[in-house]
Image (cartoon, rainbow, N blue to C red; front, side):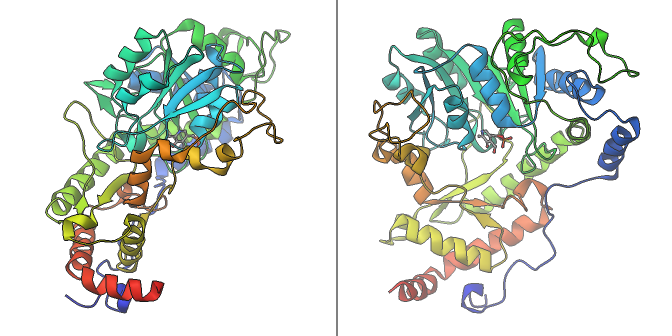
Length: 439
Ligand SMILES: Cc1ncc(COP(=O)(O)O)c(C=O)c1O
């Protein structure tokens, strides 16, 4: 094998093999054009929005779905729908996207983080109970990277303490847990349709529930607090005229999805299974190769669930190679070496969420923070989430947001594996030059 590409060798992965995400088909374009031809661009009863809600509810296996303009909005609707409010505590994972705790803060409630299980990267159910207080109202279980969380164990804790259980399935469209689709396992579930997701429409989200009451309240939160007219009153001739005076029952926001987005989401939904299958096949091939390489561990999938590999994260273990090196230093060297070989790779977070400046500034409180709920009562310490910290210091996501694994042709996986093999067979070269540069 030639020199490492980072040392001016020839990259293993030739240019031009990658497929950029999202993939837009002719069918997608026609679906959006049909909306423009129809001339109906928005509304809670507009045809594409309604059809998307029905189709996705059927796909997930729940009674109700509400389309929204983001996953964050859908999450906020779920938290608000049960009346979670100021001072209430909501438990979630220390390893998720910032939108999860933000949606809790949007209700003036307090995010309480729990460390992860290092094997699944999901919230560790054994640690949830320790965080429950008399103010705890809900748990938001995140299916991070597309792998379902330990729902039976989390549900058991929620039921024991009478807590609401919300699924943040923003990254997990179509993933299954014990034969059931995520989004149908908790009291409410939410998905993101952001452009990076396996089911993209630009910006969008979906709120799911089997409960009539939650659906009704979430619909009010979605549409400026209005109870909303019934779909029966909606006509193609007067699509923008609601004869009823708005009846406003509660504080609401404007979280409606627009029609072109809904049309694109419906069209993409037809290919979701294909996208997920490609992601799984790519992940399986890459994992087979990487599991033979000391120092790298492919992601773990428990046998009772499916992973849709929205993100494919490998952990690095320099100790398995007899190396004494800071995990984050090793991680960064491998990341740079992989990129030089032409592998798409990113970090996607480097600190547990409680370590974000937002939460660190909450310390001592009253210092201009808008969230009255904290008032100096809560201090977020990153040291309380050692597994999350360890994971982020020693792992890399293979595939980027623009070129995720689930969009790539299968043959690229052999090249990716080759790049890993090349780098790990020349780890001495990488470390000596890398360290030299750092001195
Ligand atoms: C785990 C998680 N939760 C919530 C969200 C928020 O979704 P959106 O970006 O559509 O608001 C995301 C999106 O990236 C996510 O990954």
